[in-house]
Amino acid sequence: MPSDNHPNPGQPIPQTVHVALYEHRYGTDVRAFLDSEEAMHWRTEIAKEWWTDAFDDDLPPDDQIGDVYFERMLERDEFFWTKACEIKRDPPDSTDPDSPVPSADGGGA
Image (tube, rainbow, N blue to C red; front, side):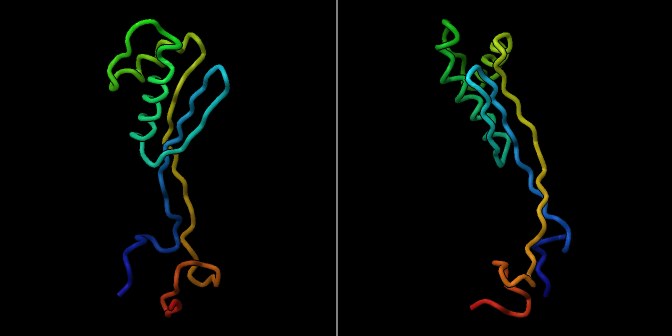
């Protein structure tokens, strides 16, 4: 019975990543995450790390600090953005002898 691991055999396998860009006075940091929550967690950590260098007031709560920090830092040309990007890759070729995927005929130990 055929496997349903790949719904469209022969079609590229899409995967979404969330690219996050942090632009600051020392340069630009770019990271890719498998979900948007991880990217936003990075934004929160950046804001918490640099808050006391930028502002004299107390830190906002974790669920607000990223928004507040980067809104206030825009005037200093510091910003953070994310973009969901789809990566398409071809499925492994089971006829390729170097492929880690065994063919349907057998192959494997």
